[in-house]
Image (cartoon, rainbow, N blue to C red; front, side):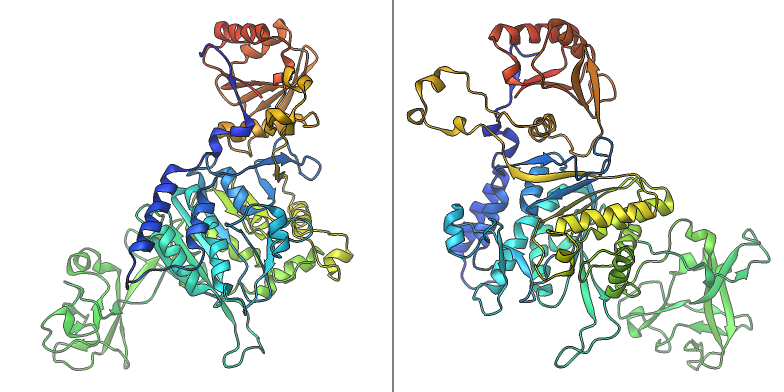
Length: 616
C-alpha cells in the first residue's frame, strides 16, 4: 500500500487523457494530406478535425437519475441521456472490449432530419450559437440542408468519431450493424471500411422496409441497407438463421439415423464460375448411368470448363454418399457419360438433428421486418413515435450473430428504445441474461406533435416509457439505470486563478466537490476515474448508523465501498476496512486534519493492505 491515499482530482481525471495512439494516427493523417497527389483516398472537408474530436477527452460526467430509473440499485441495463459522443468517450475505459453487439439507426441525412453537429474549430458556446450551431438550449443540433456545401461532410464528421470510438468497445468476437438508406449508404460504407478495415467487412444486407410505396420519381423506395462489420472477422462467430422445421417432413426408416426427420429437396450441384478442384467427377446412378453436374463440357477436361460442380469434393462424396438421393426426372439439368441429358437428378439428405442449435446461413436479403411492424407495436402500447424500426429486426440480428445469452448490447442512436425492447423480448423467450446500454439525446419534441400533446417533452422520455410499458407486458423485471450526461459538478473555485480568489478563500482548504452533489453522483465520478462498468449492482448498508454504499461488491477484493458522510470514527474505519474491498472511497471534507488521513491509511494497512484507498 502507498504511504498516502490516492486523491482523485476530478479536474484532471487520468481516464480522460488524450489517447496517444489516436494522436499518432492523427499526425499520420495530416502528413498524408500534405503528401497527397493523385491517388485513391476517402476524405472530406473536416475529416482531420473529426479525428481530433475522437481523440480528445470528455469534460463531462454521468449523473444518476434514480427517479427515472427502474430498480436503480439492481438493474444491469443502462439508459444514458445526452450526446452519444460524450457517452462513448466516458465508456472508453470502463467498457473497452466488453460489448458483443452494436446496432445503430442513425439519422439518414435525408435533408429533413437533424444530425448532431460537432464544431471542431471553436469551443465557445456563444460563438456556436451566433453561427446557428446551437439552439437556445445549447443542444448541438443543426438541420441537414441539401443546399449546403457541407451537406455530406457534416454528416460524415458527425458519424466518424462516434463509430471510431464505438469500435474500441467491441469484443474480439463483436459485430456492428448499421441501418442506412441510399442517401449516405455509399459514404458510410467507405467510412466503416476505413475504421474497421476492409477485411472486416461482413455484408451489405438489403432489408425490405416497405411493401407499398407511392413516392420516388423512377423507383418506389422500398428497402434500406444494413452494413455489417466485425471487430476481427477471423474471430467472428458463424451466422446462423432459424431452422424452419416444417421443411423436414420425411422420417428416416433405416440406418443410424432411423426415426429422424429429414428433407431431400436440396440439389447436389452448384452453379459457380469459381474453379473448384475435385468437385467435378462421375457419380453412378442406380441404373448404372454415369452423371456429371450441369454445364460440364464432354469429356470434362477440368473444373473450369463449365459452371456446374458437385457440392462435395470426391473424398467427401466417398464418405457421405449414403446421404444422396437419386430421383428420376425428365427435366434434370445433369448430363451423362455420353454427353446427353441425364434421366436422374441428385439431392442431398439434410437431417434436422444435424443442425443442432444452428440453422441455415442467413441471406443478405431480409424480408418480414417491415417498418409498419415497428409502428404497429408502438401503437399497441400507446407510444407516440414516428418511423421506429421493428424490434423483431433487432432480435433477428442478435440471434443470427451472437450465440451467447449473456451478451452486452449497445445502441447509441437509441431513438424510441427499440433495441432495449428487443433485448427484453429475447431474454423473455429463451431465458437469456443479455444486458443493454442505450444512448439517446434529450431532443425536444415538436410543439405540434402527438408526443408533446401527450406530455412527452423530449425523445428520451418516450423511450423510457416505451421500455417500462413493454417490460410490464412481458413481466420483465430487469429494469434500467437512468444516467444523464452533464457538466462535471466541481466547485468552480478550483478553476479560478489566485488573483480571482479572496484571501479567505486562499487560506481555506477548497473542496473540489460542490456541496449539492448526491452520494450517487460522487460514486459515479469514482467509477469513471477507476474504469468500473456503470451497470453493476448497488447495495446500501448501515455501519454504526452510517450509510455505506457497496458497488459491485461480493466479497474480499471486489468492487467499491464508499462512505461520504461526515462522522468517520476509528471504529467505523476498522469496520469498512474489514470488508476488504478493491477500492475504498471517502470524501475530502470528511477529514478536518491530515492526521486523520494518516490514521485511515494505517487502519487499512493493518486490516486490508491490498485495498486502494481514495478520497474525492
